[in-house]
Length: 257
Image (cartoon, rainbow, N blue to C red; front, side, top):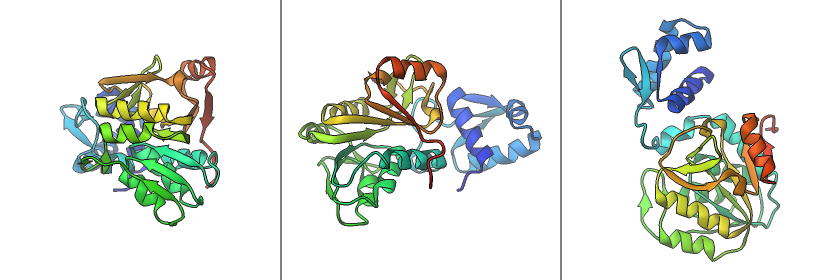
């Protein structure tokens, strides 16, 4: 399913708020309730949202969406982030790349680079970078998590910590308004910490829908990152928090195709 701009906006808003009425969505987008219902029906048909009396809600407020669903949400924003990060990475660099759809888009943008050394627990990243054949790709052992196609656990954490890579690139489940980084499992938090410890420069990648998004496991703070890449300018309190911590903020909006 290719989401329209309005459908993508509806999906992001409902994920952030948990439940939104049809009337509120119609007023937000300046269209009729019939138009919103058609969009909502299409999203519910893909199991991205669920109808509730008077409105629409998230399918699973306590967990993450399926990987295939996340791949089509904010895809243009994630591609812009991918291009912005790829512009920071020279040929022959060493990288740790984590799980998630935004790091996957970074890997897609890096496919033209030469002689990278990439340590990743994300098979989607490995597939994207295997196209050219010039990069060395290193994967941990462990149990493959379906349908995300990633490997979480002690083996991966040990592998990340065994390197001193030039860059670590990872996403996050959510960013609280106080700058706390949130994820959906302790294993995801542990993998991100291992990457942070195994690199010279950490790069957190996130589209703005992650700000204020709830996830149950806390691990790290926004200000601990060396670089934070958003698709658009973040709210002023978040930008101030990043600046006060001495981290670099990059906005991918307008990065050339």
